[in-house]
Length: 113
Length: 114
Image (cartoon, rainbow over all chains, first blue to last red; front, side, top):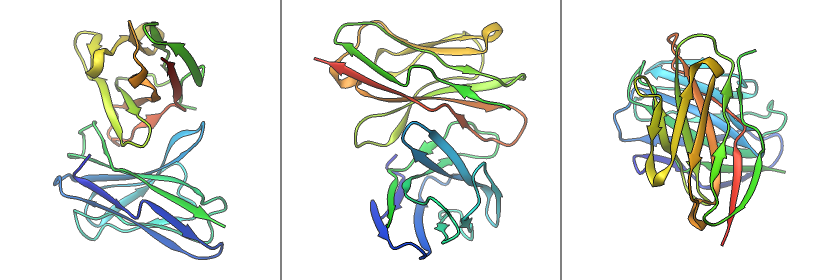
C-alpha cells in the first residue's frame, strides 16, 4: 500500500548488532503491526500496537522491541538476542481497533551474517 | 492450539486450469476471513474478505471464496488461471474476541505455466 513506507528495502548487519527497521504510515490508521515472513512459514506476528504509547507482544516477540511514540511510526528493533534474525519483515496497519482489514507495506529484507 | 491450515504448499498448473486452495481454521467462535496475495516483488495485498452475509464472496481478478461454517473452511477458487496469477496466497483469520490479530496460514506458492 502506497501509504505505508518501510525502509530500507534491504538491510545487512553483522551478528551481535542491534538494528532498527522503520515503518511509517500516512493513512491515519490507529493500529500497526509487525510480522516476520520466512519461506514456508507464512506470516508470524511479532508486536502490534492499537494506539499510541501502547503495544503488545505477538507470537514471536523474543529478541525484538518496538515503540509507538507517534501515530505515524512504529519502528522495530531486532536485538542481538534474536537467535535467527535473517528474514523478511512486514509492517501492516489497520484503521482502528476492531477494524479487521490490514494493509501491508513493501517489507524489509534483513540479512545478518 | 488455534491455527490456520493451508495444504499443498506448492501448486503448479497450466494456464486455463482451475485453481482451488484450501483453508481450514480451528477457532470455535465467530471469525472474519481473508485471502491475501503476494505477487513476485510486490506488496501483500487483499484478494477478498468475508465478514458476514453471503458465504460466497467475490474478490479481485476473478477469484472467489466460499465460507463453510460447519467445516471451518474458507477455500479460494478461480475457474481459469492466467500466468499472471503466479503468486503466493495466504489465508488469514481474525477471531472476533477483541484483540484484532490476524492469524495466517503458511501460504500456497502457485506457479502457472504459460
